[in-house]
Length: 102
Image 1 (cartoon, rainbow, N blue to C red):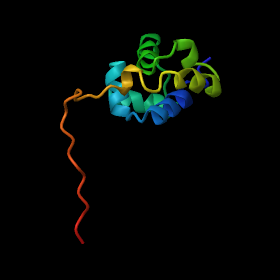
Image 2 (cartoon, helix red, strand yellow):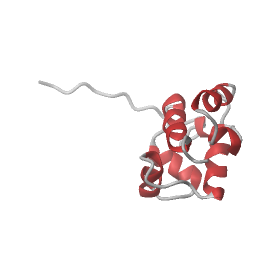
Image 3 (cartoon, helix red, strand yellow):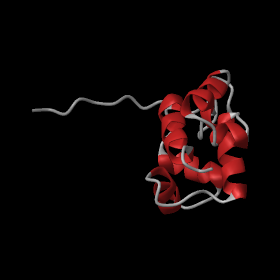
């Protein structure tokens, strides 16, 4: 049943541009636990899978589905899923990245 879940989570994180640490916070697990799920060494518990799916705006069934079906379901929520919200809030100041001097 869980053969696609790790791949789906990795692909969803890439699609939504979400780092493991942020997704781990949404799932209420450690970054190390999220890494184990990412790499397929561990499967998420039911409650964790529910929080991950909710973060991407999809159902748990979609999270465990074939990758095409999972990504198709998530595509509808690309801009309104909870995980796309800023950690800092709307009024957060953006700090520009400076180029390193040679």
